[in-house]
Image 1 (cartoon, helix red, strand yellow):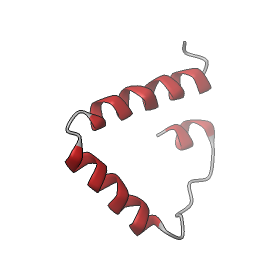
Image 2: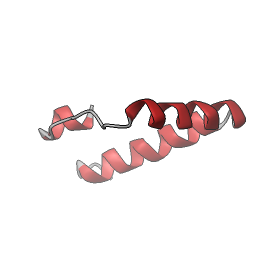
Image 3: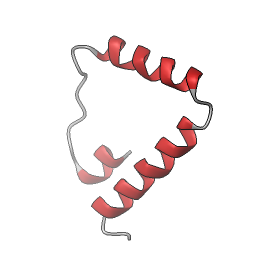
Image 4: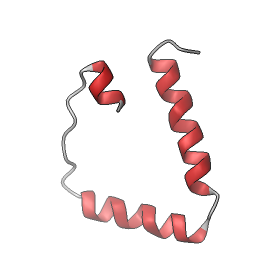
Length: 52
């Protein structure tokens, strides 16, 4: 979403399957991680867009 708003080109990482698998493992271990990560991502987006 942020890439679209700011015009940053979104490219695929060469090791994206490995990256996704590591996130899935962490999410299975910690059920609160998605909420925490989402909150931090929102704060970062707001800061970048000057909405803080």
